[in-house]
Length: 430
Image (cartoon, rainbow, N blue to C red; front, side, top):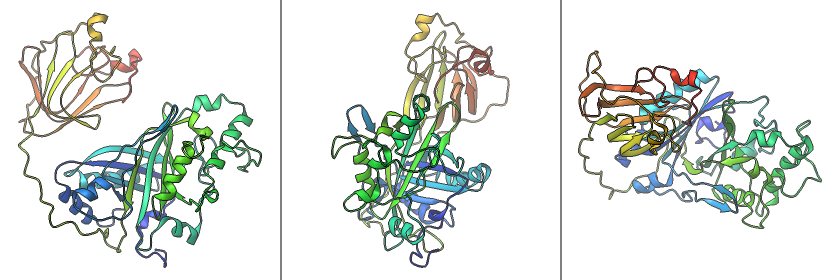
């Protein structure tokens, strides 16, 4: 640890080859989640706490607040406040997976995992657009003076950007350079670049007072969908907020040229507590906080296979990270609101039996609990957790702790997936 900041979280200094960005939403007792965070020993990650969680336990964190949505004209920075953030640095993706999984297991009883985003280092620290990222990052002692408060704590902003890379690549090379205000060929800034150039809109020394940040941003994604996980640390939220507002043109009407080529999809503020060498140093909670009364057992999930129609789900559900108690999910492959049904099966003439023979396999006892439903990009619906699958008339098909169900409309083993989506060229988002 740096001698001037002995209480900073160790992982704050990492510039890894790979990482995993994790974000959770509280479920159940806030005090139980707070205690689980307090119990973490050497988590191997940067841990951040959201304003809502701190408020729920009555903990005082001066300067911490929720990020609020920014918009001007056709550009938006959405606010997606959550309760816990972790950035897990790693030497390689396998190590990142293992360390992230350990955190998920530790916090899982008290928090619902909303985002698990693998990150990677590209070339020599470049963004996927080909431009060097974070070139103005402060170094050494200046980095920690920028990122850390006197007690070793820090504030962090986490924002996932989706790059419209095809649109950006269609520009002539000079126009691309002018969007960033820097030449891709040698990473040198262009003095005569337009005032809307990204480096000019975010020049940290041009603010009054200067708005310096320590960036730990990393690319994410694959060849189809990709971008940048913008991660910035500071001793307070003020310099981060001022930079974002200037990018949006809220102070002078001039918007960052980069907004036309990359879309912000998330945005959240967190506070990263100090570290005493063994665990997080968390503020005291309010004695007046009373743990909530135990909730009644959640109804187990039931999946009804509708004849020539959708899958009707009921019970305690988590669909693509969102709690629900019922849903109609498309299985014809034609809905315009995937994964949800919009009655396209009626217009497309979809045919699939609702009366399916029982599955000849050992049945499990279905106990109360929440069932997760995750659409797979260009693939099936994956369910895990207790569930009963029944026919249109209510006859049991199977009871299990998970299933993979067809949503492309082509499986020969409906309602179950047989891999036909690949051959059929099925396309649908996760």
